Image 1: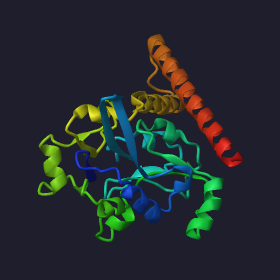
Image 2: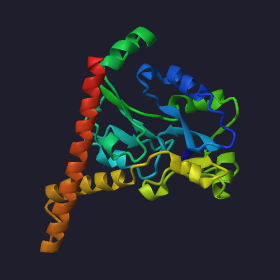
Image 3: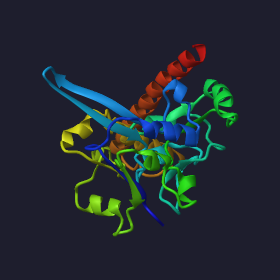
Length: 269
């Protein structure tokens, strides 16, 4: 099994967004609604005259312990054994958006009916049903011996792709040296997209919902425990279980409600 990953060098990223364009064309994403598999955040901080501008590429972190996979009720989200890449089987995805709520990095989006209609005009084809989508590291290209579209298009060479299990690969050397660091490892999902930054605080510019993965796991665990009828031997355990289940459920209900509002607004526009 390989462990494909990417190192993104923020010190040379120019924010040209060529990666976005290449990804949109390669993977037929609904860019017209600002939905991307990879997106470059243009972040301005400070106040005049001490102003800083940071370009921070945003994508699926290809976690080794992904909460999205645990949250998925159908098994549509999974880790492919051959490549170690987190993928989504669109044919069995029921668009419940639990995975979206579970992802700390906000890396997933919904491909809606409105997006499908526009995709037919732009790309000449569409999947035919609503589904959740995200970066796959262009897994289809990797299996043909090619690199992800965003990597081959990056003019500055800021995106470096390779196998973490290969000690001679550039990504492996950058990660093992400590120069390349993951984004918000405290989220507990073991992300394996890494970043190089002159100032480590630059990585804090992208909002990360650190609690999302934990709430997803609490929700999943509570369902499993409820189904199997085990693990609740004491009143104290019952109290913890009830608290976790209630809070996890509330978290998902709130996120789902917000997503539903966004979808309705989009379809009305």
